[in-house]
Length: 582
View 1 (cartoon, rainbow, N blue to C red):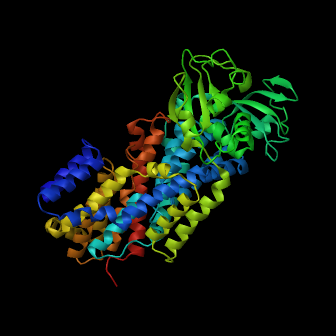
View 2: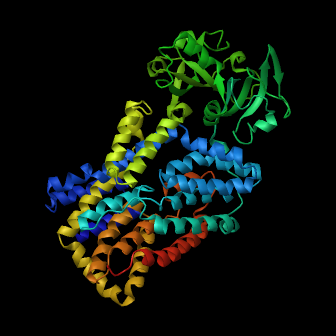
View 3: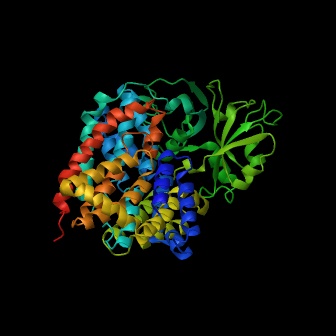
C-alpha cells in the first residue's frame, strides 16, 4: 500500500499520465492486489460527494448560459465609472461569486471584461489578470461548495469518523483570508507585477454584425460616446442605417434612435453579449423566426462558425441575393473577413474564406452541403437573460436549502439540476459536457484509495512515524507543517489529490498526539486551494497566455500571497477550532 502511495505521489506530481488515468490505474492496482473488493472500489462513483460535485458543475453552467454572471459584470461597469475603483470592485465581486460557483468559470467570464476595463484605465493587462485569477481562488475558501476541493474533503471526513464540513464552516477562516488576500491584490501585487500588454485580442476573430436598436433598448437617445459600446462592450460601429440612408464612420456625438441598423464589429462573444444586454436584435434572426417559427425557437437553435469554400453558390452574391435563409434555414448573425468592410451585413458580397456566424437548428447546420465547412460549435456562448431569474432562483434555492439544513446539499443540487433540465434552461447534452469528468473520476477513485489506506494499516504506520517527528513541535508546529506540506504538494498536483493524500495523514497524526483533528482538516482544506506560486491552477492557466506572464511572475507575486494566507490561517484556525476537543 505504501509503494502504491509513493507511486501515486510521483505520477500526480509529474503528470506523466493525466490525473484521472493515474487514479484509475491506482484503483485497478488495488483491485488486482485484493486490497479492495469491487463493491468498495466502485462505491465512490455513487457517493453523494461525486453526485453533488457533478450537479454543481451543471448548475454553474446554467448560470453562465443564462448570462447571470455577465449581467453582474455589466451592472458593475455601468455603475462604477472610475476605472481603478471598478477594477477593485470587480475583484471583490469575483471573489464573492466564486464562493458559490466554479472559480475557473468565473475567471473565464470576467477575463474579457477586466481586460477591457484595464485598457480603458491605461493599465497593462498583466497588472490585473493575475489578480483576477487569484481573487477567484480566494473566494473559493469561503463555503463548502466554493471549490471541488472543499466538497471532496467534506465528503471524505465521515470515513474517518468525523462529521462533514458545514456549508459556511470554512467562512470563519475563509473570509479573513479572502479579505487579507484582496488587500494584498489591491495594494501590493501591482508593485510586483510586470507591465505587459494583453494578448487576448490576438486570438479573437472580429465579426461584422447587422444589429437593430429594438424598442426599450438602453441605447435609445445615447450618443456613441455615452453608450460606451467600444469601451465597455468591445463593439465598433462602422456605419449606421437610418431611414434609408447610410451613415459611414459616425462620430462619437452621433445619437442613436430606435430602429437604427448598426454595422457593428467585434468578437463573437461581444456581439452575442451585445444582443443580450443592450436591447439589439439581428435582422436576419428576426426574419427567420417570422418565416419559420417552428424551426427557430431560441431554446433549440445552435450557433456555429462556418467558412465559405471555393465553388460555393454564395460567392459574389449578397446573402439576400443568394436567399440564404430560404436555402439553408439558418440566420447569419455576423461575418468575418480579413479585410475590414464598411457595409451592412446584408450588402456584403460573399468571398472565399469568409467565416459566417450561423444560428439555426442542428439538423439544418448539418445539411449545409459541401460549399460551407463547419469550423466549430459556439452554442454555449449564447446568453438568454430571459432565463436568468429562473436560473438564479434554482441556484439560490439549492444553496439556501443545503446551507439551512432543509435538505441535504446533495439532494438540493440534484433536484435543482432536474428542474433546470425540465425547464429547458440547459440541454442534456450541454449538461453532460459541463461536468469536469476527470475531476469526478479522480475524486471517486481517491475516495476508495483513502478507505484502503486506512483499512490496510498503512495510514496508521505512516502517521505513527510522523507523530514521533512532529510531537516536539506542538499543535502549532503540526498545523504549520501540514499546511506547508499541503501547499507544496498542491503546486505540482491537483488540489483535490493533494487534499485527499494529506487528509488521512493529518487526521491520524492529530489523533495519535491527542489533538482534535478538526483544525488540521480545516488547515489542509485552506492550504489545498492555495495554488498561487505556480500557474498550474486552471484559473491561473486562463490568464497565463493573455497576460503574457512567465512562470517566475507567479512565484514573485504568489509567494507573498501564500505567506499571507498561511499567517492569517495560523492566527484564526486555533481560535475557532481549538486543538483540544472540549
